[in-house]
Each structure stands twice: as C-alpha cells, then as structure tokens.
Length: 518
Image 1 (cartoon, rainbow, N blue to C red):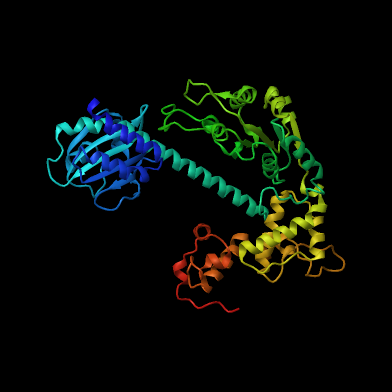
Image 2 (image 1 turned 180 degrees about the vertical axis):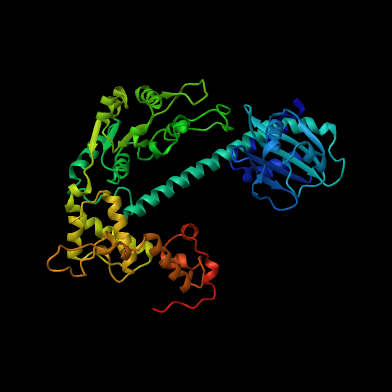
C-alpha cells in the first residue's frame, strides 16, 4: 500500500483545499487516471433517510453534473447499506454488478465496472464507481488502489455534504428571516416594533434589560399576542445576534419524538434512525433557542431539559457521549405554569430555572392605542401581498376595530384586515363584513341592530378562490412570468400553485378564456 502514498497524498491535498466536490473531483480524477484506465467516474451520495442515491459528481460521457435522486427501497436498500460498509471492491460487467448490488448503478451505466463503497466510522455515505468501454479493462491488480481511495474520497464527499447542509440551513434561516420581516412589514429585524413606545413600552424596557444578559427568559401571553416577535427582539439585542435563532413549537411535536427533536439521536437508536441527527439544541449552539408552548412538554422531557439548562450538557438519544452547547433559552407559553406546578403537571425546579426573567405580554385588547397603527400596517401589507390598491381604515372603521375584543389578538387582527382587503377588492376595506357585522343595513327602530345573516358572509376559501380565478382569467391560465397570475397577485408562483391545489383550481381550465370585464 505504501507505493500508493504519493498519489493518495495528492488526492488528500485536492480534497482539503477545495471543499466542494464539483470543484475538487476534476483534479482528483486526473490523479486517479494515472494509475487506473477508466473512461467514466461516478460518485454517488447516499441519503438513507430518504432511501435514495444522488449523483454527487460524474466525469466522462456526459458533462459532470449533479443528477436526480435514484430511489432505493426494500431489500435493495438493506443490501446497498451493507455493501457501502464492506471494505472491499466489486468488479465486473455493469449487468453483473447491477444484479449483485441492486440499485447501485444508474440506468444508463454500461461497460466494465469497478466500484467500492464509501463510509466513515460505520456510517455509509455513498459509492465510487469507475467505468470503462472496453470489456475486461479492470483487472485484480486495480482493486487495491480502488480500496485505498475509499477514505480520501469519502472524506471529500462528507465535506461536500456538510457544506451543502450548512448552505441549506443558512438559506432556510434567511427565508425564515425574510418571512418574518414580510409578516411584520419591516425592512430589518432591528426596526421599531409597532407599540414599542406605547402599549408595549414596559415590555420593550424589559427586553432591553434582559437582552444583554444570558439569563433564561419566560414570555407569558395569550395565543397570537406576538411572543415570537418579542423572543426575536431579545435575540437581536443580545451578544448572540450573529448566531442562529431557532423556534420550536413544543406542542406540535409528537411525544415520542420530542427527545429526538430536541437532543438528536444516534444512528440505529430506534426504528427509522438510519443516520445520526443533530437536535435543536446542537443546531442552536452559539445562538438562541425559542421553546414555544413549553408547558406542553412531558415530565420525562422536562427532566432532560432541566439538566441542559443547569450545566449545558446532554446526550443524544441512544448515545453515550456527553455533549456540551452554549445556548440561550427563551421559553413561552399561554398557560398558567404556576398552577401547573401546583397541580404536579410541571416540574417546580424547571419552573424556577426558566422563570428567571418573566415578561408578561399584554393582550391586544389591553393596548387599544396600538390598534390604529397596526391596522394601517396590516392594510398596507395586505395590499402588497394581494396586488391590490392600498386602502386604509376610515376613522369609523378604526373605532370599530378598537371596540372589538380581539380574542385572537394580533394574529386575528392581521387576518381580519387581509380578509377586509380581499372583500373590498382594492376599492375599500370591507372591515364590517370581515368582522361579521355590517352597519350599512338599517335595523328596525324598535329593535337592536341585528348581525348580518350568516349566509351573506362568504367563507374565506370561497373569496380566495374567486380572487385567484379572476387572476387566472386575466392571464389566460399562465402562472409564472411577467404576465402570470403570480405576478398579478404579488406572490411566489410556488405559493400560488400550493393554494390552487388546496382549493382544487386547475389552471388548464382558464387557458384561452377571455379576460373578465372590469
């Protein structure tokens, strides 16, 4: 094996200086070609959780590209996983190898083949496959070098996978940030919150005080009152603002998966755990983890959460190694945790640990002075999202909004304003109809004003359907492009397709139809 050392060192060097596989593999292929007579080289990346192989790099024949996934299922999947972990190589015609290791070779692979699995620390990663047009090209003396290539190629593939995972996480975080800013109608997370100088003045004073520390924060407030916005403001004002901010809805995770979601798991720790997985705490290392609806956690998970809050250590599910993270925890709930402690449904020691700095977020009805500014903000945002002419609430409508009790808080106000914008169709804000009362119709003199009959209030899905159908008629069923319905409605084409699928709208029925009259 020592006579391979110079060649292997050069491959290690190329893999180290270029972390992206598509950048490193052309040079690596030229080095390998000095000792192995191949015409084609293929590196496959294994995704055990999705039961598929993906083309990570391909040289020879077609231009190098990243291909579509090749599904692998059932017995073929188990055989492939075992083969990837085998410290050897497989040699012969493509048809023979395809039968020996089902699912390994792409449908277009032909000729003499030499293949070896790629793995690191008993974790299967994929495969290195060499192909030659001439039958019998690969001989037994070629196999030792192929086996020696396993480790440097596997490390290069792992680096590429991790880099792409980081890019995906960064893009997801940026998309989440843009989504939040869009929902708030803000350009930057540091922009002043609506109500920061009035109804939320005391709250923001508390945010400013606690943000600079690393103390756990507990945000208390009704559903829809804006607890996530306050949690993000705490993160933005902290020394961890450059780190990740991750939100976990504890009430939305099945009880049997909470441990795995929060703390991660090792490969094989339970049925379906095909690979090691980082939990939310590991992913939030160096940043802030927002545990929304923390009162929904089971007692068993509360014990593990208490430990990580006390000393920052934990173990993955099925693991023996003790891990440490630096995470600032901000928790939130709409429930009465003090009463839950008294009833024995929430651990008292965990309550003391997370209740270091409580922030009570007032309900929207408790800060009516903020409603006019918020209604204006949501009206402008709705007009932009729906592609309508901006319309603002009249003074009379603002008065009705202030008088309304808002059981759904800020979330309900945003929904009502958007519904009013849809009902008004760019001509006005139909706030009375959106609230379910219409004062236009006079009531009998001897009776109190009666609400509009339920049959006159159309379901929101019906209104959305009609609005989308009008856009499709105008665009002759076109969804994308400068003259498409998505551009007309001011939303992403994929978002529009999702809504159409949900509403059962088929764009083909609008192709060739004349535009609706104005």
